[in-house]
Image (cartoon, rainbow, N blue to C red; front, side):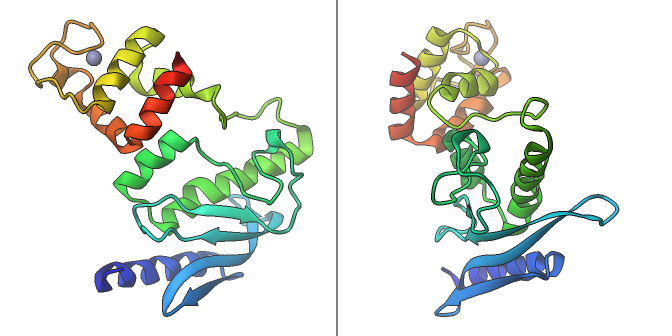
Length: 214
Ligand SMILES: [Zn+2]
């Protein structure tokens, strides 16, 4: 960790602790390793809706790694449709998207605001009324095709595979060449940005996903 990054991380952690005073940070050799304690879910009026004991691990690649959250209190039933493992590892995003987000960098503060809070609110609603009216997110292989369909805005699996094969092989076609998706537009006016984002998923995962899509 560089001095500058370490300073940024420490400021980031302090911001989170300010917003959530019940949490504490654990350091090793002066480097913050995780944040743990009771997380109070409050509504917009500040009224407490529930409390979970959590531990959020800070990735060594900070901020270019996706944090990992463990629910320690076991309030959340350990079953797959609660998006939690037997050991309490929470699933908040699919792997491919985590990699793209991590590549762009994610602060701890943003992780708490966008993932921790949303995930625990979801769990509270689940406790009350089940998941019938809850927005779902996928967490296994069946979600792979859906992820790419949504990211590329392409439905046809054959076309998606063709795009992924190009990205995985790093065969970047010219920005002025016709886009691989057959839209007839130049790549720069079509999928250039989407393809660039996919590079962050990494060759190994992309090749795996090409197999999964079949
Ligand atoms: Zn295109």
